[in-house]
Image (cartoon, rainbow, N blue to C red; front, side, top):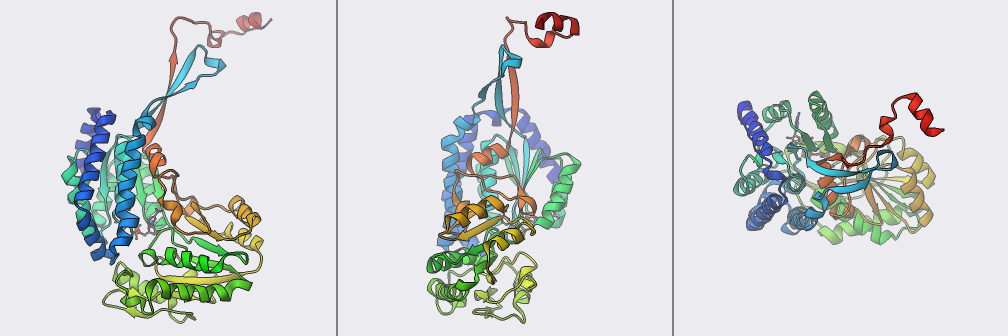
Length: 455
Ligand code: NAD
């Protein structure tokens, strides 16, 4: 798409926003209902596109993408009127007689940039939240997941005029042209490296941003943990989408005395979940492209492997790898892995882990497997990360009732449900003053009058 076409879309969205139509809650509910209908109608195509782009099974695609998007719509529609209602607050003694009302005002024209790993869910969920909040939306899905990007365009074009929601497909030129536009809000999901660029561009217009980024999310297993259960849930969380999940447990920190039992349990779980030859499991996803396939193989080259590492070049699949004796110097520990490779590092004292994590970049997620309530409390209280689970992985991202987002290098801001509505609205405070009474403190503006009054 040409730069001028992108500028035209934004100009037309601005004109549409100015009509005030999107401020009507019934209009927003109608838009969300139309979107839900269209997604349901195109469900088979969405699942097929996810299979083509990432080799995802229909079960995985439904659970992590289509199902989650549909339930976000249902949840948002149920609560929207309540969230959108102006909220009344006391003005406090200093402004009596008056009260405050806080309005949830849409920002206006919003840009949503999404990645390829959960290309449907990570594009549509912020679209739902932004439309619910009364904004117009331009969506830029990833160029790497082309089939899904096409279905997203079909669905949004079918439901909406481009003045409400438009899709811009493309690569570098389109990204650059989009970021030159003046948007009222930018919601970006992707790598910290591109997050920097987005924030820099947004700063030129003082456009607020939400950045949903990635990083290395640790998974801690202490000696009190239920090891078979931990192994089952770690393998499930690590190998969903073949490890190409922003909140996948990136590496495991295990207390030394349970290291061997955990490695054995992890190997057994990989076999239980993907069979003796995961490469031939039809529901084991592929690596998105040749570049990432090669990058991942590079991370395990020359390393000691407890299992996996076989690969199918044509299908771009790598059998799940466990690195049993990884160290902080291992290649796989130098970057976000984003693939089916699990380094295992041993620790002796949980206090050392807590201290070390605080020296690293803040991760998007943290997982802790323990039965020790004191350890649970200390880890939660003393480490900083986006969100996480005790005795599970990934599941905290599936609820609509709580915010999801990162901190530090893993991002800023959050969304899902009410948090998403709040992200896409400016809280506009109005003091509502009574006109009858006019005796408040403000008019005591000279010292003499004040001294008389307080005598
Ligand atoms: P990416 O940063 O390469 O790309 C994300 C999006 O930005 C894509 O649409 C891409 O086309 C666009 N883009 C690329 N270069 C750009 C530029 N110069 N200007 C503007 N836009 C540009 O990320 P990716 O490879 O698609 O996704 C993987 C990363 O995303 C990982 O780091 C992962 O952890 C992170 N991620 C985070 C979340 C989250 O919710 N926090 C979810 C999924 C993925």
